[in-house]
Length: 284
Ligand SMILES: [Zn+2]
Picture 1 (tube, rainbow, N blue to C red):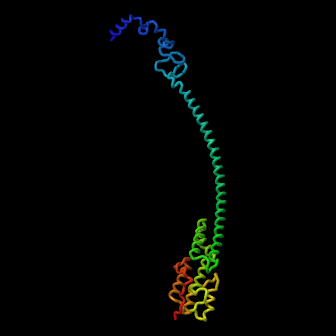
Picture 2: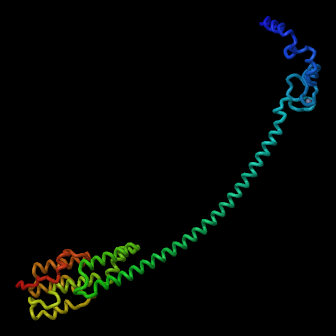
Picture 3: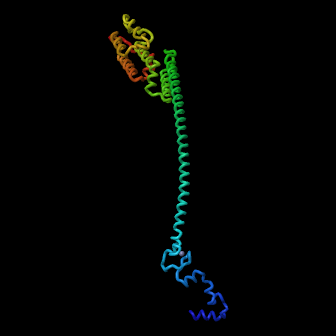
């Protein structure tokens, strides 16, 4: 290996100065510190006075020979500074958040007040709508039931009208119980009950089978008005005592009882045909 190098040097004729550095140039490149260190052993990197080998702190200037430890206090100050800056920004952020939070709270409180106000207005509007539905519904029901009673609306027409009106009232939020009370207050059911009494007693004209002496009672039972419509048992008792209560008549009285209980027809087809009823015959 060394032979090869010297061979190469021989070929170039020793003219390459980059390879063959002159031995006298090295001392000039040594810095002052190295020279002192060579003369006096190890020196302090700050005051350049001699320190013992292995000493951490210079006995002259008291500075640490390891740069990290020497600058640790500066790093400490820097870190504290950075922390203070961060703390400042955090504080400012917190303060802003608090302002934003109190602003939001204020907004929320105002929104709540507005919502309560709107809710109150909405409730009043619904109340007015319900009152309107009750009033107009009641008037319509009375009109349907009382207009030309003997040849006015058909059974289906009347029931459809009642269904439509009560459905409307339920839709605007009137409770079912209130709807029923309202329908009842229009006399809707009473009119039908009165019709039952009249038709079970034989319709508009005095029935042939009725004994002569009972006509006054017959007229009294039919003519009591809506407030005191004759009850099924009264009608039954009367027909029985007159000797004209047939099995068909008893079924009609059962229909009447059913209607009082359920406000619905037990036999709608029979009810629709009430003007054709021919149940009154002498049974004795
Ligand atoms: Zn020193």
